[in-house]
Image (cartoon, rainbow, N blue to C red; front, top):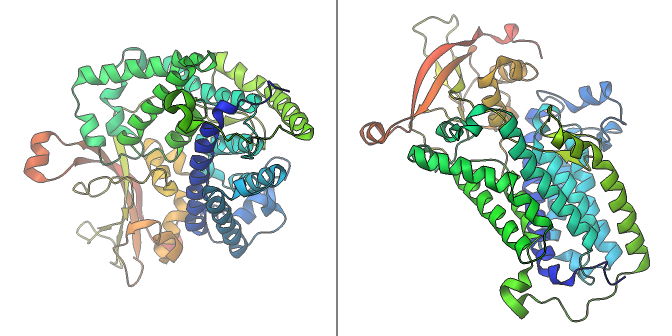
Length: 478
C-alpha cells in the first residue's frame, strides 16, 4: 500500500523516538530511586497492601503475582537499561519485529509500576507516557517508513493534550477568561523553577499576553495539525515553542518534554533542512503482517477514543483521567483553576522530651518545594519529585494528605533512611526527633526591593497549625 507510510517523516520519527527513550530513562530512574519510601514494603502506601485489595483486572501489573523491594528495584533498573539501549539506537540494529518487541518492553515495565503507584502515580503525564509509549511500538523500525495511521494517532494525542487543557481552562477558573490567571500562577504553581520568580515579576500586560497566547495555542492551533504541510509543521513548531516557555517557567516533570516529542513527530524536517533530512534510499516496503497489525490496532484505538472525545465536548469535562486499565487512550488537562495564594506545609521536629513553646523546633528541608525563604528554586524537570508535589497538594487541602501524611510523620519519627533520602536536609542526623509537628505558612514572592535588601526570594507568614506535636506512639494512622 503506497499510502501506508510517509517517508518524509523518517527524521521526525527518529527525533521522537530518542526524546521518548530519554523520558523513559528519567521515569524509570525516578521509580528506582524513590519507590522504597513511597510504595515499598515499608513505604507510605505499600504495594502488597494495595494488590491485596485491588484485583488484577482493574490494575494489571506483574506485582500482583510477586512483590519484594528487591524485585521492584530489578524491574525499575531493567527499565533504565532498556531505555538506555533505545536511546543509543539499538532498535535500529534489529529487524522490524525485534524493534517492536524492544519498544514494547519499557511500556509493559512502566505499566506495571503505574498501576500499583497509587497516589504517587496519579499524574496525567504517567498516562501520557503509557499512551505515547504504546504508539511508539507501532512506529518502530528504521528500515521502513513511519506508518501514516500511527503519525495521525500521535497528532490525535497531541490534539487532546493541548485542546483538552485549553477547554478545561475556559470552562474552569474565570481568571482564564479575564486573562488574569498568570498574575498568580507563576507564584502558586506546584514546584517553581529558577526563573519562576522573574516570570511572576513580569509586568501585568505581559501576563495578559501570556494568557491570550495560551488560548490561541491550545484552542486554535491544534486544529492545524490536521492540515496539509507546511501549515502542520508550523503549528507543531509553535506548540513546541510554547512548551519550552513552560519548561523555563516551572517544573512540570516530563509533561512538557513529552508534548514537545509529540509535536516534533508532526514536523516535516525535509521541508526545513532539505536533502540533509531525507530518508535512506533503501527503505524497505512494509511487510503485510505489519500493515495488518497497524491497521487493526489503529482501528481499536480509534474506537477507544470515543470516551475521551466525548469528554472534550462534555460540560463536565474531567482532566487526567484513564478510561481503561492499560492507559491506551486518556483525557488530559491542567490548571482548570489557579490558586491565588501559595500555602506550604512546613514540617519540624524537636529533640525535647516534652514540647514547649520555647522548644528548639528544627525544619526539614525538601529538595524542590519552597522551605527556607532564602533558598532559590532549582530545576528538576523532567525528573519528578513525587513527595514534593504531594506536599503542594497538602497545602491546598488536608484532604489531599489523608492517605500518606500520617505514614510520612511516622517514618520521620523513626528516622527511616529511605524516607530521609527523599529530603534535601534532615536536621536530626544522629537520632530521630522525639516530636514532629507541621505548620501551614503563606508564601509569596518578594519584590525586587525585598530581594536586594534581604536576599530572600520568598516571604512567609504563619497561617495555622497543620499537625500538632506528635510522638511515635501518637503518629496518625495510615
